[in-house]
Length: 166
Image 1: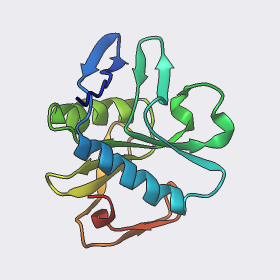
Image 2: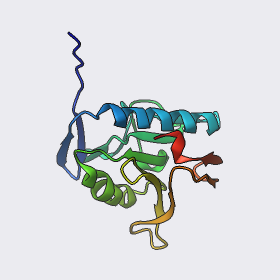
Image 3: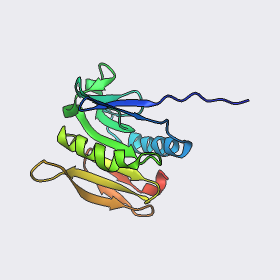
Image 4: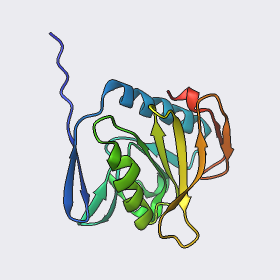
Protein backbone atom coordinates (compact mmCIF):
# COMPACT_ATOMS: atom_id res chain seq x y z
CA UNK A 1 0.00 0.00 0.00
CA UNK A 2 1.35 3.41 -1.02
CA UNK A 3 0.39 6.44 0.98
CA UNK A 4 1.54 10.03 0.59
CA UNK A 5 1.02 12.62 3.27
CA UNK A 6 0.73 16.10 1.81
CA UNK A 7 0.21 19.22 3.86
CA UNK A 8 -2.33 21.94 3.28
CA UNK A 9 -0.96 25.41 2.61
CA UNK A 10 -1.80 28.14 5.12
CA UNK A 11 -1.43 31.77 4.08
CA UNK A 12 -2.55 34.98 5.71
CA UNK A 13 -4.07 37.82 3.67
CA UNK A 14 -5.02 40.92 5.63
CA UNK A 15 -5.58 38.88 8.77
CA UNK A 16 -7.70 36.21 7.03
CA UNK A 17 -6.33 32.67 6.95
CA UNK A 18 -6.54 31.08 3.50
CA UNK A 19 -6.16 27.30 3.48
CA UNK A 20 -5.60 25.45 0.22
CA UNK A 21 -5.52 21.75 -0.46
CA UNK A 22 -2.25 20.10 -1.47
CA UNK A 23 -1.44 20.46 -5.17
CA UNK A 24 -2.05 17.58 -7.57
CA UNK A 25 0.83 15.85 -9.41
CA UNK A 26 0.42 17.89 -12.61
CA UNK A 27 0.67 21.12 -10.61
CA UNK A 28 3.81 19.89 -8.84
CA UNK A 29 5.36 18.82 -12.17
CA UNK A 30 4.66 22.23 -13.75
CA UNK A 31 6.29 24.05 -10.81
CA UNK A 32 9.28 21.70 -11.01
CA UNK A 33 9.70 22.17 -14.78
CA UNK A 34 9.44 25.97 -14.53
CA UNK A 35 11.95 26.05 -11.70
CA UNK A 36 14.42 24.08 -13.82
CA UNK A 37 13.99 26.47 -16.76
CA UNK A 38 14.47 29.55 -14.56
CA UNK A 39 17.43 28.12 -12.63
CA UNK A 40 19.28 27.35 -15.88
CA UNK A 41 19.01 31.01 -16.89
CA UNK A 42 19.14 32.90 -13.59
CA UNK A 43 22.35 34.67 -12.57
CA UNK A 44 24.15 32.97 -9.67
CA UNK A 45 23.26 35.77 -7.22
CA UNK A 46 19.54 34.97 -7.60
CA UNK A 47 17.58 32.16 -5.98
CA UNK A 48 14.56 30.40 -7.52
CA UNK A 49 12.58 29.14 -4.54
CA UNK A 50 9.59 26.85 -4.09
CA UNK A 51 7.50 25.56 -1.20
CA UNK A 52 8.79 26.50 2.23
CA UNK A 53 9.69 30.06 1.29
CA UNK A 54 7.30 32.95 1.40
CA UNK A 55 6.83 36.69 1.58
CA UNK A 56 5.91 38.48 4.80
CA UNK A 57 4.53 42.01 4.70
CA UNK A 58 3.51 42.08 8.37
CA UNK A 59 1.83 39.85 10.97
CA UNK A 60 -1.40 39.97 8.91
CA UNK A 61 -0.03 39.22 5.44
CA UNK A 62 2.08 36.14 4.74
CA UNK A 63 1.94 34.31 1.43
CA UNK A 64 3.69 31.40 -0.25
CA UNK A 65 3.92 31.60 -4.05
CA UNK A 66 4.51 28.42 -6.03
CA UNK A 67 7.80 29.97 -7.18
CA UNK A 68 9.64 33.00 -5.90
CA UNK A 69 12.73 34.70 -7.32
CA UNK A 70 14.90 36.81 -5.02
CA UNK A 71 18.53 37.62 -4.34
CA UNK A 72 20.40 34.94 -2.40
CA UNK A 73 21.75 37.61 -0.06
CA UNK A 74 18.31 38.08 1.57
CA UNK A 75 17.85 34.40 2.45
CA UNK A 76 18.25 34.59 6.21
CA UNK A 77 15.04 32.81 7.20
CA UNK A 78 12.06 31.30 5.39
CA UNK A 79 10.26 34.65 4.95
CA UNK A 80 11.44 37.53 2.79
CA UNK A 81 10.16 41.09 2.57
CA UNK A 82 8.01 42.12 -0.43
CA UNK A 83 10.69 44.59 -1.57
CA UNK A 84 13.08 41.65 -1.97
CA UNK A 85 10.78 39.57 -4.17
CA UNK A 86 11.72 40.03 -7.82
CA UNK A 87 9.11 37.63 -9.19
CA UNK A 88 6.18 35.67 -7.76
CA UNK A 89 4.72 32.81 -9.80
CA UNK A 90 1.49 30.93 -9.26
CA UNK A 91 0.52 27.81 -11.17
CA UNK A 92 -3.26 27.86 -11.46
CA UNK A 93 -4.80 25.26 -9.18
CA UNK A 94 -7.82 23.26 -10.34
CA UNK A 95 -9.45 23.57 -6.93
CA UNK A 96 -9.14 27.34 -6.40
CA UNK A 97 -8.22 29.24 -9.61
CA UNK A 98 -9.71 32.50 -8.32
CA UNK A 99 -6.96 32.66 -5.68
CA UNK A 100 -4.34 32.96 -8.44
CA UNK A 101 -6.30 35.07 -10.95
CA UNK A 102 -7.93 37.48 -8.50
CA UNK A 103 -6.86 37.35 -4.85
CA UNK A 104 -3.11 36.98 -5.29
CA UNK A 105 -3.03 39.29 -8.31
CA UNK A 106 -4.56 42.03 -6.16
CA UNK A 107 -2.45 41.37 -3.03
CA UNK A 108 0.86 40.99 -4.89
CA UNK A 109 0.30 44.29 -6.73
CA UNK A 110 -0.77 46.05 -3.54
CA UNK A 111 2.36 45.07 -1.62
CA UNK A 112 4.69 45.93 -4.50
CA UNK A 113 5.83 42.65 -6.07
CA UNK A 114 7.33 43.97 -9.34
CA UNK A 115 6.40 40.98 -11.49
CA UNK A 116 3.75 38.27 -11.23
CA UNK A 117 3.36 35.29 -13.54
CA UNK A 118 0.24 33.17 -13.78
CA UNK A 119 0.96 29.76 -15.31
CA UNK A 120 -2.22 28.09 -16.54
CA UNK A 121 -2.05 24.58 -17.99
CA UNK A 122 -5.73 24.82 -18.87
CA UNK A 123 -5.31 28.03 -20.91
CA UNK A 124 -2.68 26.97 -21.71
CA UNK A 125 -0.15 29.71 -21.32
CA UNK A 126 1.95 32.03 -19.23
CA UNK A 127 0.61 35.48 -18.32
CA UNK A 128 3.21 38.07 -17.35
CA UNK A 129 1.96 40.94 -15.20
CA UNK A 130 3.74 44.12 -14.12
CA UNK A 131 2.57 47.20 -12.22
CA UNK A 132 0.39 49.73 -14.00
CA UNK A 133 1.75 53.23 -14.51
CA UNK A 134 -0.05 54.39 -11.35
CA UNK A 135 1.17 51.28 -9.43
CA UNK A 136 -2.41 50.50 -8.30
CA UNK A 137 -2.57 47.12 -9.95
CA UNK A 138 -1.03 44.94 -12.63
CA UNK A 139 -1.26 45.10 -16.37
CA UNK A 140 -0.67 42.18 -18.70
CA UNK A 141 2.56 42.67 -20.65
CA UNK A 142 2.61 39.24 -22.30
CA UNK A 143 0.56 36.10 -22.76
CA UNK A 144 2.73 33.31 -24.13
CA UNK A 145 1.28 30.06 -25.44
CA UNK A 146 3.20 26.78 -25.70
CA UNK A 147 5.15 26.80 -28.95
CA UNK A 148 5.86 30.53 -28.76
CA UNK A 149 9.14 31.83 -27.39
CA UNK A 150 9.29 34.74 -25.00
CA UNK A 151 12.45 36.66 -24.20
CA UNK A 152 12.81 39.47 -21.68
CA UNK A 153 15.28 41.19 -19.37
CA UNK A 154 13.10 41.17 -16.23
CA UNK A 155 13.61 39.84 -13.59
CA UNK A 156 16.75 38.65 -15.43
CA UNK A 157 17.67 37.86 -19.02
CA UNK A 158 15.55 34.90 -20.00
CA UNK A 159 14.17 33.10 -23.02
CA UNK A 160 11.49 30.45 -22.64
CA UNK A 161 8.70 28.56 -24.33
CA UNK A 162 5.82 27.47 -22.08
CA UNK A 163 5.95 24.08 -23.85
CA UNK A 164 9.04 23.46 -21.70
CA UNK A 165 6.93 23.53 -18.54
CA UNK A 166 3.62 21.88 -19.51
